[in-house]
Length: 115
Length: 113
Image (cartoon, rainbow over all chains, first blue to last red; front, top):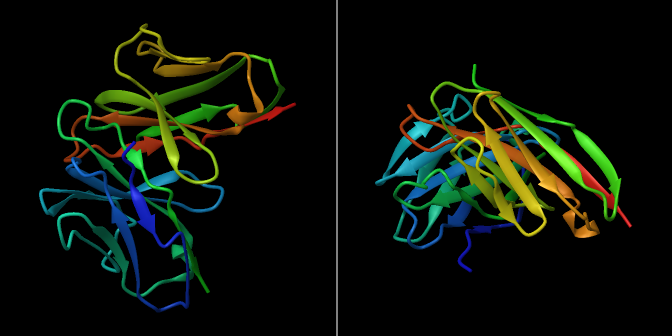
């Protein structure tokens, strides 16, 4: 069964460093998302991406964050200058076009630890 | 403010028991309610509910939506240790530019042998 894949599974970085989290969405999906989950807290929406542009972003998604679809398969989340509070599990998700497009398929996540 | 509330926060049962997990929501322009199972990492899709009163079933799991009460339940019968996980409820709504989901805090289910 097709799945969303994310790399790396774990990322440790120093505060102030840039990180890029990578995702390969399911191939026929057209909507792409990033969510995060801080330990012990809710899964939170960060950003959605459709037709090569951001559709919507949350308050969390400030100028330090950016997303890109550099080619036909990858979808990346960049955090330009990481802060301690960026430590979280980051999930990529994708969904199909059409009437059930709110049914999101999630990747296994990247656990980001900022020291 | 849109919100999704799940109860109980955690639950410990024995194998063979039946459990009912609850989800209530307050969102404008409700579109659908989704249940996910989160073991270790990735939330995996269980059900999507859009119509009130129509039960969705998959094996020992079933779920139903009540739009009047703004709530949903997820039932698991004859629980097994493999059902141990966090069960997440999420709501999608019309009006935004996209299909973002708002999640509840989840219910942690532990099934003991």
